[in-house]
Amino acid sequence: MEKLVRKTNPNVTEVFDRYTDPVRGKMLFLRELIIETAEETEGIDELEETLKWGEPSYRTKNGSTIRMDWKSEAPDQSALYFQCTSRLVDTFRMVFDRTFHYEGNRAIIFAINQQIPVPELKECIKAALRYHKVKDQLTLGI
Image 1 (cartoon, rainbow, N blue to C red):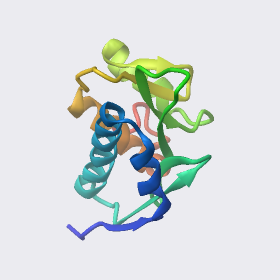
Image 2: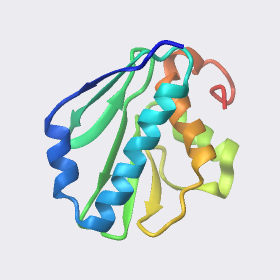
Image 3: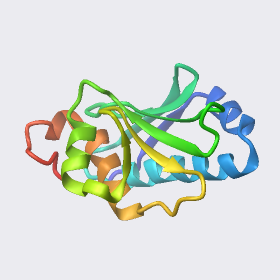
Image 4: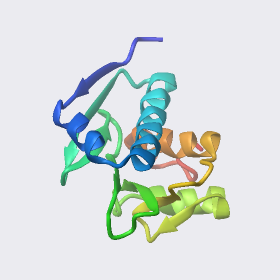
């Protein structure tokens, strides 16, 4: 398998540095899951880490952008955001049902103190990172 090339906007680090300690730990964990999933997924050779709307965002050549953030208006939760025009969150809801807490058709929400179901979340991340290759499959390859 080819080594993953990561292109990182240096301003992303500043965003992670601004989070409070418990939040930063959760956000860095989500970031690491995205990077790890990209490294493990066949056909993904490049991952771009940038900022969209001031939030850490991840995309691949054939994928749909994943954003993540924590907001002071909801201090006890963080989220992974997906393009609301995609079938991603609807498919996650169909496949994983109550495994996650969802926000409409755009996000998976995590309580800051929640134990994240890693294998299931990695499947969601993989579907997003490969979205344009799997969007015609009923369950997006999950």
